[in-house]
Length: 407
Image 1 (cartoon, one colour):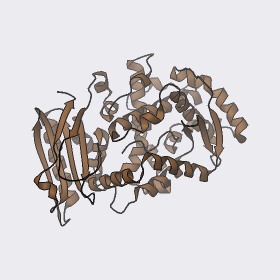
Image 2: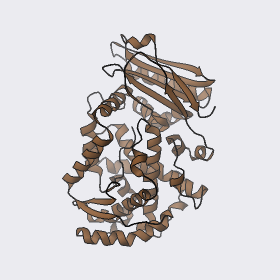
Image 3: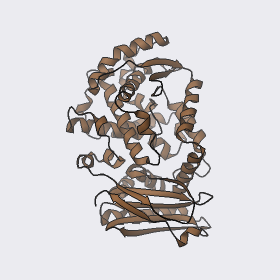
């Protein structure tokens, strides 16, 4: 479910750097944009500790061309069968309304949000023609970092991982977080993001959300979309600041975290606390979609269902891995397994999920739900099954095998 923003500069980044508005300069045409890129490159290289191997191209695009690009990338990333599977999963979890069509909603939100983007296929920065002059330096500085990243790692291969949502979300947080942190001293040399306390960026979330809510499409989008757009920039930026303190002189691109748990809790990255892998091994019904949530989207799930962010953070803590399947010819059955660090975390999660799911399915006829604590390979595991009461899989619920993690 991650990877919403790809390599675009959303308005969330602009909100971080509004202080440079008074320094902005109008840039007319691609020649002046190219000159801006050339002048910014040394500062971007210095703040990232990476050398440019080549100079990226910078081009103007109309808003219609931006939308066409987003449609192309969205359809490339989520072909119709995968889109249908993901949409069914989001609806079954309650992360989006049953009536919401994911594709047009996401395209509308991103078209409204995107102030510029870097395309790895063409090694080019694209700047919308209708962008406000004060945003230009913000956008170019951010996208230049992505262009530089692409010269050291294959960006598309990182963000296009299939059925590895949590790992993909963690990688995107690194890419966007590094760009967010690196652009600040490029725009404002006197600012030193490394001196900011851990959590500073995440604490700007409410102010950023307030600004974002002035945008019509964003304001009406579900929580999963709104928070999913913000997390890579702010959660990722906090991790980058921590990493630069902990591993001075080391490139984060050489050791990208494998889970949002490691982004949210950097100490777990330092301890090499890798998530447990879960693999479905049997079942009697057709699998329409399979993926995982990760700790961050488990938080969002509880926040959506219970309406309390603080409680959601508590209930998701101790996550160590998860996997779900959407089953049945109508994509109307959900089986979700999660594994936990210890019995206390599993017990807390079980109670919270039972309460959340009772609230979610209250008064819904014809469905059956079951939340059950299990022990697999000596590990505390929780299984959620939500399906029609007549679902044939109730007699043979799919099982999973565990590997890795905190065994």
